[in-house]
Length: 244
Image 1 (spheres, helix red, strand yellow):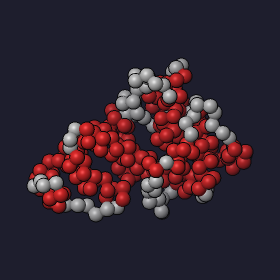
Image 2 (image 1 turned 135 degrees about the horizontal axis):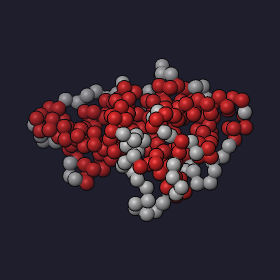
Image 3 (image 1 turned 120 degrees about the horizontal axis):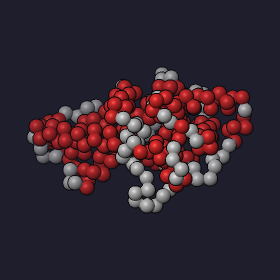
Image 4 (image 1 turned 90 degrees about the vertical axis):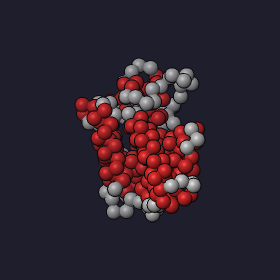
């Protein structure tokens, strides 16, 4: 990964453009960034398609290795649809090819691709979404959505910690995130206020402030993959549809 602070654009739609450029370091950084974000939906799709844990992990690694070798990320074109749709189409084609050539499963990532095995075993990704009853395509979308929500949630936590707004984060987490990700009961604003020595109205104000910050951080995250404001808005709508 590049070490220069300005080596890679992280909050605008320069990412996909960088993947199409000639700067090898930038392209590899972008590939690793996207692979790290998209392996959960790829793995979830494979599991829901009937592969056991070991096979799904091996195929996930092989799929991203194939995408790196074929410049798959760099081929993403907003005129052809969103990156997520392109990846799902490519994944289905890859799985079909695997059935015709068993040795594809033994492919190893070319030099420079991040080790997905390490990512898949990390504590950071222990949470397993409830996928029962969903099609493989729906699992892919839900895992993508959960990944976005979780990353933005962690950024909000860090931001609130740095700005002395811990109560804002706790109220948002208990009121919004825990019910969405973990199926927890929605805590009342009155109860949340009592936890922090606030009135119900003050707790509501904290929640609104945290929601605005979360929305801003989510838009920054989605801009990694979207190239227009309209596409950012549509991705966020898709995200919440996938979670419900």
